Image (cartoon, rainbow, N blue to C red; front, side, top):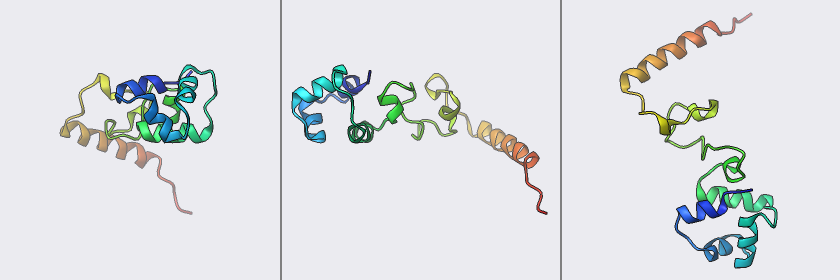
Length: 113
């Protein structure tokens, strides 16, 4: 299973646009979208870049579209949180988080020998 059709519809493009991107016929895109033909690695990379999603999201292995986007300024997606359910932190909260991180890192500081 993959999300090619969903992403294509979100971007409001036809199968012929993806066919040109991947160097395939339109029938080949249909087969990829329905899963009748497995996605080759080269297609996975091109599609993920084109739709700006992770390969895991494209292949339905994750529900996080792209953990590297600016929509997640604190990197919370990497530990399983989605910012879509929350308001962004205020400047004061960011300062508090930064101080908390400093405390945690101070406790983990390596001692030089």
